[in-house]
Length: 306
Image (spheres, rainbow, N blue to C red):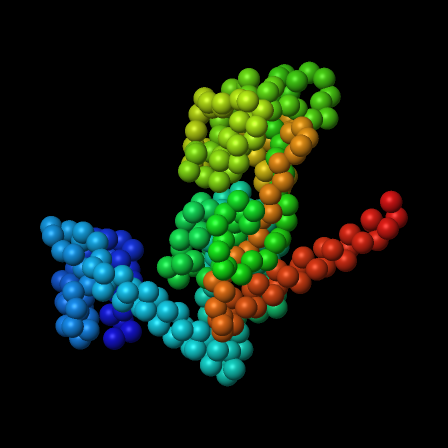
């Protein structure tokens, strides 16, 4: 039954027998037979069938919710028993927004130093995909925006504040600028992330506050594509400072903080607020909390001396 429930979860996500079978590593006839057997054992139709999957029936939606809970609880049970006998092990799946990727190693390195038998799988996802993947139990933990997303009952651990800067050829600003205005930035040849990404939606909102409707010359859903264009010395972009600090641009390119009021958004870890949660998820969130606590302790002497 458990295998069939897993098959059903994947099929519900893919909405296509062929794609679901490929993802599961089984043949399409085997998948079709398993779903038929699940329907027969439950006594209800789960899928509206046509030439392809046309969606779930009302009963299918209810079974999907139960299937997600059952498979998640089964995994939690296995991890908890394994943790008692062999120590923390298994694979933790993390989904992170692209701009937060440079912050991930700080947590993963510290976590693996403490739990060397754990394996990690890191996936790049936009903020909407992170939340959706958590709800479908496709990832265990997400790193995303905490202030601009409908987090609902998700457990969260704030990790850092995101602020923004302009990356641009030095020739665009000959004087030593401490900050750059949003109006001045809007006049440049901009390459930005696509509007489906929260980073871009935040920028659009900030430009609108200044009465500016921004139309970039180039949009991309890949940070690598933006970096490649920036490195040519013919483009400008506005990106999180934490991300820019992890990169190396050639000497003809400069970075300038955006003017006040500066954009600041909380970035942190999110996970389903389940009781009990899996030992892996609990340990990973705890590691992040310890790192945040250490940062606060390290900053206290600096603040006191000012």
